[in-house]
Length: 180
Image (cartoon, rainbow, N blue to C red):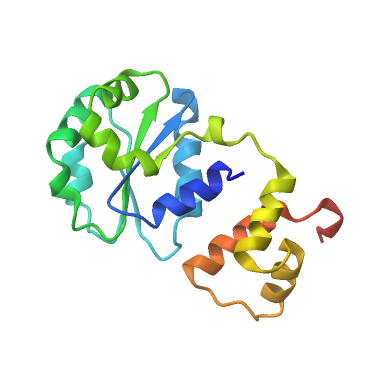
């Protein structure tokens, strides 16, 4: 089973737009920090609060959009999707779960279909099955997390975004006896 970290990492590889749901206004900053920490470290990060600010960021900058008026932001995005198509790095829209933005997104089928594969709901996705996650890691990397990390520590793994993503996953899956 994929957890939210894997889904966030995967969605970050698919610009131009992704949506992350969060549970409480008090958690917004930590959720933004988590997304930024999973992103390619070479990407500049900018926090914005409007669609216009997001569009004014360079196409190679990760824009973290936390709108004050979520419903209006979704309406604006639904009417202007084509303004984002040239982005090399996504704009990440943060919506309060059950809030006006999520309700507006449900009423914007065109936008919802566009972002469906990049709609991340961490609390729903973090129903973590470690055995399934390890099996999935082995299928994708061809090695156990411990073998991957040993190779990484020996300098045998490159620093590509894909390798960094696998390294992050391996660190999450590494057994407690393996921690140094």
